[in-house]
Length: 252
Ligand code: PGA
Image (cartoon, rainbow, N blue to C red; front, side, top):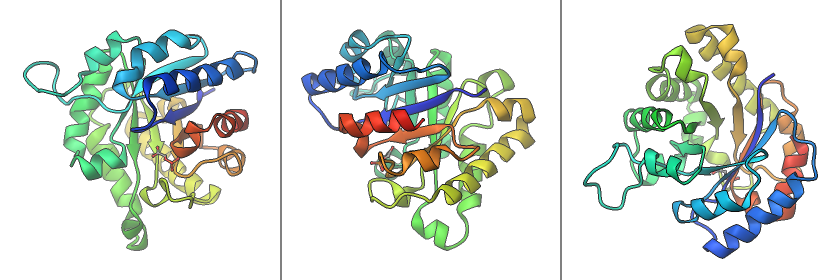
């Protein structure tokens, strides 16, 4: 059985005290809810990590960062390393979110370095992939996703690829209110799992959680999570609203 995951991506929102309040509300819910085989991950801004780690139940909720540096340490003013993130008690890190690819010019090659460093410091990378609307309309969505996987992840050996979580987030669905249909998402998730199978074999392909992200909410989550290759979600906007996020956890 693959682990099922709902991950919150708070992006650049919430003051520290607001983050603590939200994390506590999520924690209070999760502590009363059956969570076997399931995990909630809260990906918070760097400034919040230590305190969020201290208010959530370690066994039920993991904390993650939203990015890490492509270098290990040194004279890179303003950067935050994978080692530093791990030292806060966080266990996950989002790598290659489309906003990082777009606004910070993060290429698949740069992201491969980040993935390596995350794994070196025992962080689980949530590696994000997905096509833009233009790429979908041109019919090159599968080529794009394949390239993102091949360059950013498939350099890993068998031991390391098993530790990764993949998030398929079509760029046109992020923050737009237009989610992929369950069928569209399932088609891509099955394509991704097949690529993993071709490269690493069926057993590894069956182990890796593949999350969907893009305008998930309390209304569409259940149907999307019911698809056979969809193992949970990466949630932006709706993760900032406790009642919405809790409904999404219930849909898992
Ligand atoms: P959204 O964002 O849920 O607000 O569409 C998802 C994401 O960017 O991870």
